[in-house]
Length: 154
Image 1: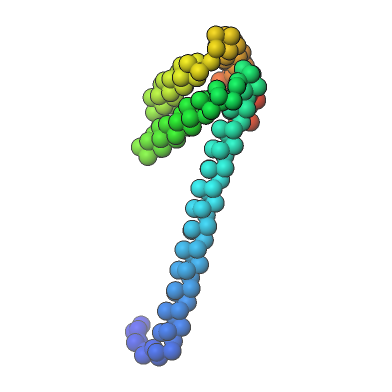
Image 2: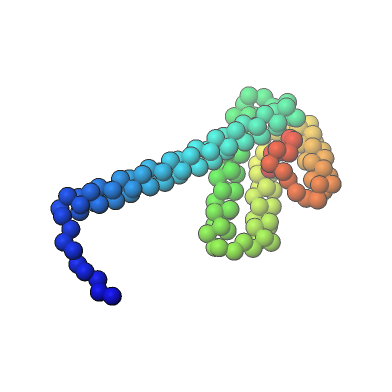
């Protein structure tokens, strides 16, 4: 079987080129929309999560406005650090769960110690009792923390 090279008219070539440009444009627009949606969803979740954590702490510990203003940057910084740790592990391809767990534990302890510097003695005692209660609840669930777990600040 022999392939015959038929000449293509300029009009046919232009139509083919235009179809290719349209398909590429559609693909590019869809890719941008998907990316933007994911970025906005992450940002919305992060902001909502931060506000929820602050509200829970404020309710549990009767925080003043000044204390809230001091705790907010601590929690914001922690969220950024958590994201960086997760991204670093994700970029490695395989996740060393033990290393991830120890990094997150160190981050959690650092955050708790920073929060305690803002609290009064009474609030520190309430904070510690509250953390112990949460740890017991998490233990009963097998250590799994669900996304919508009540009164979660970690």
